[in-house]
Image 1 (cartoon, rainbow, N blue to C red):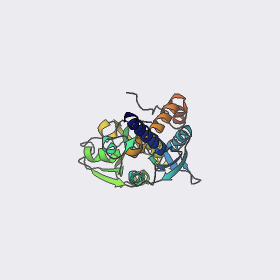
Image 2: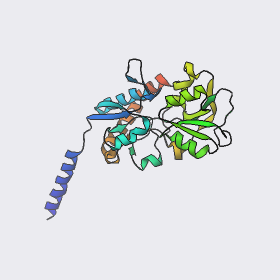
Image 3: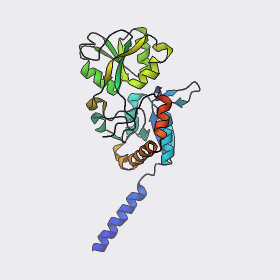
Image 4: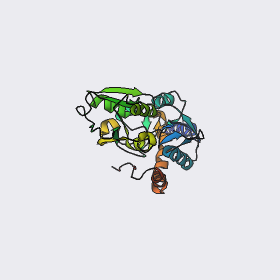
Amino acid sequence: MKKSILFALTLAASLAQAQAPEWKKLRIGVEGAYPPFSEIGPDGKLKGFEIELVQAYCASMGAQCTLVQQEFDGLIPALQSRKVDAIFASVSITEERQKVIAFSKPYYNTPGRLVAKAGAKLEPTAAGLKGKKIGVQRGTTHETYAAKTFTQSEIVRYGSQDQVFLDLKSGRIDATLMDSPAADFGFLKKPEGKGFAFAGGPINDDKIFGVGTGVGMRKADEATLGKKFNAAIDALQANGTFKKLADKYFDYDIAPTKK
């Protein structure tokens, strides 16, 4: 009897292992409108820090990855409907998102910042932005933070950060809240960002912004795909590949803080 039970358990474990996906081919959801992390180059191809990084992770995992461009607020629905297998698009690991999807360990972490006209002397507080129009990208943690914190402001939501920049430049909004490197490289260091600057200091709120940016995946895939991504994240940190790619885009450390 005991042998029969042991055999059944062994057979079940073997079948489960055989049915577990090997993840040799992956569809990765990316945004393509969030420089310097991901954007469309003049040749129509995706480029940026996260594009290079996910390709390096895929190579480390021995996986053939196809990048699927999607607006940011459509990424989680695309994951849940199985149009993509993972999300790699500066998605912060937050308690709210962890209720619906799983994450790898963090692969980078940066604070949020407010961007406004240079000399505007705005502060990222409810009183400091009273009566102002604040532009945010829909579906982001910055939208959540702005709605919760800037209670005396009008929060204007957009499908992409590029749309936010257009309205900021034209004066239809007074400021935008977003990730600091994306603001720096995607706007402030470009000709269209002339006359604009960071307003106030860095904004950190672990409850809303989370503990860093991770690879998003379905909860059912966390034990298999999550394990592979975590191993790749560790490997590229250890062999210097992450630092080499990060140094290409940033002049400051964006590696997640080890806790």
